[in-house]
Image (cartoon, rainbow, N blue to C red):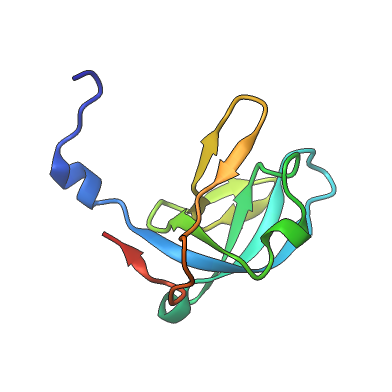
Length: 110
């Protein structure tokens, strides 16, 4: 299989459920939204995501989504992103991954 990784490589990725507390548009960007996300005991983090074209604050705030939480922070537009929201790129659309039932913020996907 092409691009196959070892199971131990996959185990390095920490995937958690986070609840979006707030969303701000970044004025100088056509793509980025700044999210404040609650990861329960793991704390709150700032997450930047290029989903502005598809989602508004009303779509995101108060809802739980799936995030990769142990990636190195990345600077974008002078701001630091401390996690990555998980999504499916469907060509002209983006589908965000979410739990099918409410769980504790910060729950780890294993």
